[in-house]
Image (cartoon, rainbow, N blue to C red; front, top):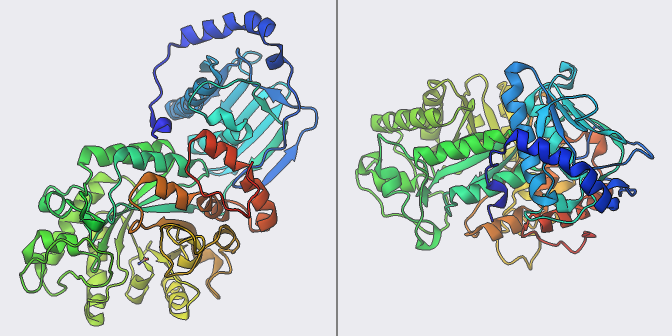
Length: 536
Ligand code: ACM
């Protein structure tokens, strides 16, 4: 289950290089198939790159003696080396080849990974070339290199992603790719409050998200059913408030060390963790843990149902803001990213005038920590600090669209998570065994077939930060169910965030999606084999 999560073993460079050189004549003689590339099938990439050209007759085959060369400035060497190590540790598992990583040596290093590309590629952009002589991935930053290596993994046969040794050959079709993202915010959200997910499970989800070039990992860390992140100044939030989950099964929470591990793991895959503490509603776990947070001074019992909108922090009490100051300080200390999400949705038990008072005061506790404020679309009803991000979760309804425009009119950015398209917990159809349907049924096509630029009428293009696919876990209590709901829809949202508008086409996408099936089989992903897709 956590096969992808296994850290790469330290391997002796000299040993690997010697093994590669020794392997040359022996393996060349004993496995002629590896030495004679056959034509590889046309690669079906998700997200579709900005430009991709086939190079006829330029197919390349990974060899037992292939050597990976890293070309990087001293400042970026460690990060570039890590990207190379991530690639080779996976490929060593599946190919059995030694694949040493060394500084670039012309003529020796047939796979070249460079961060010395032109800055015109942007931070996440890259160029990738496969020809008869080898493979090169060129970027201006280690992050761009990581995105390019992600593409390289998809160019390889699906079995390259397997956790055990597979038979070659390892052919790549000749190609020249130049690629960079359409939007800077391409995210997914995991609700770990309704059901708790272990560090290993979270890592697995991060691994799968990173395969599609997502760069934001939003964690919904506190809701009515459980508080999941350690706060030393308010310890009962986790010891009591995190003890259960939906249906009353044992919950859990992340210690500071565990959360740091998640943040580091995500950062190694170039995903920024965006921690969310939902306020002023969705707060029963906190209210149950501390009586003084309640207006009447009485702590409610823990809640393990799935209703929403019944809890509220006490807007008139100073202790509420002392609490938020402590919480956001400790959360900020645990998350190096520049954004904290304060929730703000469905505050149905907070009088409206109180809501208007509360959000700016909560936002001030976030900006005090030098973080940007993010919140669900409802926060647009209040004045927002500069740099804020509002998250649209509407269903084409006029009120949600108005809130998105209100956010933009204040200078805030908008992240698009339309519930009737991007919510991964919505059922695919009536027969989906779990998930919800309050926003409608979301088929694979419905999830993909929309344009972020035109979703909300009159929302200026410049206000759109990008897209995010949330997965809420009221009905999802294990990783198998998460994977079933996220795949195959998550790659569709990833493509909407990365690929140019002109590249978005359901028929063509559907065909590329079908080719991911064998990859998910290699990775043991429990994906939904939507019957309208030709899986192969
Ligand atoms: C939400 O779905 N309440 C953001």
